[in-house]
Amino acid sequence: MAVRCEQVRLAGYTTLRLGGPARCFVEATTDDELIDAVGRADREGEPVLVLGGGSNLVVADEGFAGTAVHVATRGVTTGPGGPRDAGRGVTTTPGGSRDGRVLVRARAGEEWDPFVARCVEEGLSGVECLSGIPGLLGATPIQNVGAYGQDVSETIVEVRAYDRERGEVVVLDRDACRFGYRSSAFKGAHRHVVLEVTFALEHDDLSAPIRYAELARTLGVDPGERVPLRDAREAVLGLRRGKGMVLDPADPDTRSAGSFFTNPILDPDQVTDLEKRVADRLGAGAVFPRYPEPDGRTKTSAAWLIDKAGFTKGYGRGPVRISTKHALALTNADGGRTEDLLALAREVRDGVRAAFGVTLVNEPVFVGVRL
Image (cartoon, rainbow, N blue to C red; front, side, top):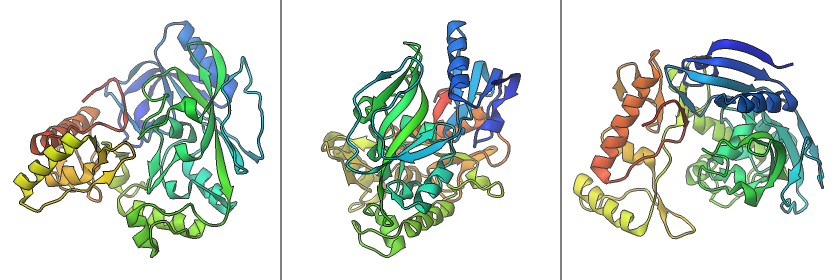
């Protein structure tokens, strides 16, 4: 039976350690408990916050005037796959191609990094470069979590979820998930509660081709080469630790929501404008990081823009600051409030826009607040 409590402070359930109390708090350890808690709140007209690991969440100081449902389901199964019954009131969209890969199904409440470690240990390739990312597995399709040249959308073949509008469990294939850069059909919509995610992974002791230049340099290989899975995982963990992106209670720089802003994707006119602004600010011949996108647009680095706009590592505003290790992380190092964090985020966003004409967009999910 799900555990229900009143006025539970949400700061303890977020990596930022920020956020006031939820009016009602439910701990759901099974899919049925999760569905029942959300369905009950919906029927009563109660606002619902589905809470995972809290690693990508910014909650208002006032808290949440509704029901927070903490996902604590567990279970991982590995097998060849095939047609499956999603359970209560199932509707299934067509499944994606498996191409002989190993299907791994995991409940939403599984911790992400131990899941990655298990895949590496069992010789399953495809998520190794996503090592060290905090949070729960159910959040990964929502954000289309990615790092070091890998995105979960490359290996997810289906997501089983509770459809709050229809009151039934559905299975969405990869196309139905509508994955994009740090986005999906789930993000911001609140219609679906993720119950289980199925990944199709290669049974191989070698990593997927290394795409990210920094990781390739660390491994001493050329981009496109493959390395042993464990080597890829350890290299990624090392890089993330160096940037304060692996949770460590002894390191205040890890008291963050990871990357606070997404990397901007610019159309050709925006690229031309940015080139002029960079030359004006930094001098003729100055260049900014650019990564071509398949649709003809160009991705650039939010961290680079932040730094060059004058917000260097360690820059602070009261009790919150930019990480001393990475310009893209905003940290609650000294016991601040959510409003302190947002004030710093607004200052950074507005400063980058004034310097370079680019408006940064927050990556974490906001609850009861906005920039």
